[in-house]
Image 1 (cartoon, helix red, strand yellow):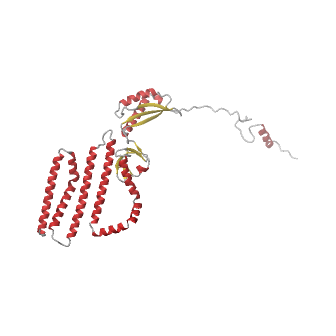
Image 2: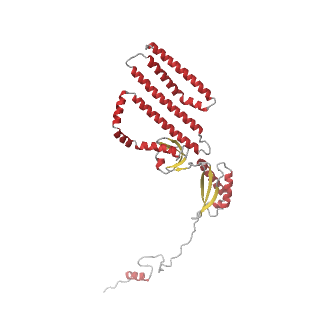
Length: 381
């Protein structure tokens, strides 16, 4: 084939036409499939643009390599297309990884009552997707660097001193690598999963995101706590939904001794019958303590998950307080004080004269004698 600029322009235009035609045909086929299959619509959304870019780059590269006139900058153009092909191919692979993640997450939904398996699957899929994307990006960056002639010499010199470099890199990236391995351990050890309810650093929240290096906890008041992955492998924490989401909670009252637990127990049944927050598993009212002038009454109730249990405890507490105020006011806690008169102290000696007088010359007969020595006439010799 003659390498002329006219032939190059014609082949480039032909490459553009072929790219547009191929993408149109593929898009039509996928859209027809999307009418019956949901995954096809997800594939279009994720991979449409990177697929077109890859196809266009490859066709233009073929047209350029076969028809571009021989010039001094032909190797540079070849290198540019090679870099574009590597970058667009990595983009397409990352898009396919996101597509696979979307399909898996759509299959394992967590908006159900018993979603432990779904939460574990979502956690593992997200970690694997991030790991795959990280590997693709690192390999693509390395492949792009190797396209430069000077990079090969640099790579040889680096490999020659691999021992020293590995030691320095290991010391420098020790914490980072530890978090990466901890993230992988979290994903496959089932210690925590996305949407788990946890208590960390005395804060209640849900696991919002798990990455290779850190975990994001969505605190109940919409704050986000970001913790390194090593925290969940080295520090103790509470996981309220590791096996199931059902929980048991307590509501406690300090009441007067005149309280009637039997009537409170009947009222508890009526309160729970008026709400859908209770899952009908446990309903217990007991007197757990009776010292210090108060009677402690504890109520145990259960709910399907932690947020529902919190709302149920608040509801039971409010309704029971209102009932105590209306129907059993004698049960409201009171502080009793007994007032008594001070009894005389018979161990103290009786005073002579003024009973309140105290001091050197008051209180007993010896004191009167001492006083007379100072108040009587003074004898002179």
